[in-house]
Length: 250
Image (cartoon, rainbow, N blue to C red; front, side):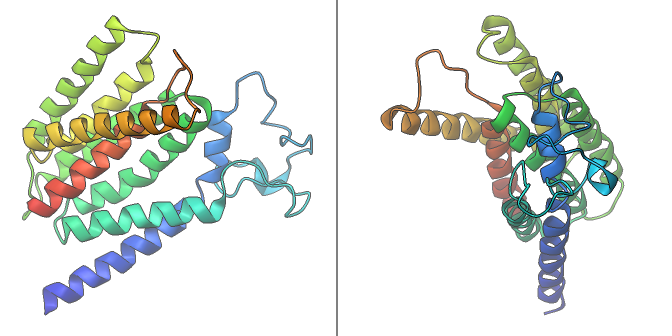
């Protein structure tokens, strides 16, 4: 009974954490997606001067000209999605200490997804900290009792998945960006924590989700031949599925 109460408390806390952090993501999602040549530092897309708190990096994507001047992704939608991701990870992982790592990485993964969907770009200020945090935090969790993974396989997983995508990048650099290679380092570390089986499941799930979405887009007439596709969201979705399956199995 006590374990059930702990799990309920963790799930509620994860929901509140995801919703709270999710409200801070729309503004960086917009700013990372804007081309460097655009003056987003000084003006919103409507041409209004950005002043005060709105000049910061975290928060809703709106300027001081009123609630009608909103840009970037919907704050409510992003908060809801982030909360759902955190809740499902908490339910699957339970009271094991690696849950703290998943809850810290989840908002960053949502942010990477938002940026890549809009701009087909995975910025270094997001992908490199994602990989570094995954390895460092999992290394710390390895010293905490009752964890269900291994840091060694996490490190090997980062190298394996990063190396795999690097080979793909060398073969077809126009279809896969180097940002995807850097993202693969962090995802490989997270999946590798639960072993090689998790790495396989997460990678295969990402490829399957990407293929399915591409086929649906082609069937609906929205896909064009040789059109560039953002792979980051599919990679992240696959890793998310792999983590859920392997964390629950563990």
